Length: 259
Image (tube, rainbow, N blue to C red; front, side, top):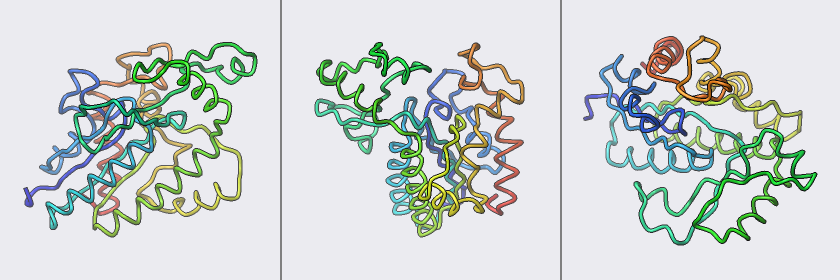
């Protein structure tokens, strides 16, 4: 395997080859790999939050470097919605990968007007997780929604990305990181602006608020496989993944002298 470039991918459903049967071996990292006779390890899982994406990437990249000390590795990371977080479920006994541990993604609502509803004592319709006592889970979800702040989430994300960059550089692993759905714009804040500036001139990152993979697919007039009424967050097919790899990722990776 040391003779081949390893393309590592992590993300949510927008990068997950198991999201739809037609996407098996046909998502963007596969097309990048085909261009350079590479080998793909895709650890993207639908429903992932950014914390899970970064945490498992840290595990996987340390592990890959330990078992393949001289392998050229390129990590392609597609970030998710800032609204997602995690909870710990004690009763989980079987996971596809042990490094997923007992974490479960938590989303307190799928509504677009959830904040207005919450403040007006209207149910924000938290998706049910049967692993938990529903009474306490509802209280937690409503509390999480009430205290949710996009700026706070973005500050922590930028902090995680700065630390992830340092780790990957120390492991001699190339990478490119971008949003899958474009992140919402946050108002100026000292810490937010400070952390954002650390990544601003690094061409291994796309601006989280200006670029999103699925937004790009929509702008290129690809038709999503679902959510036809909301194509800016829909899931796209093989044609979009191939085009994204050939028109966006591969040129950028060549520009960075990674490929």
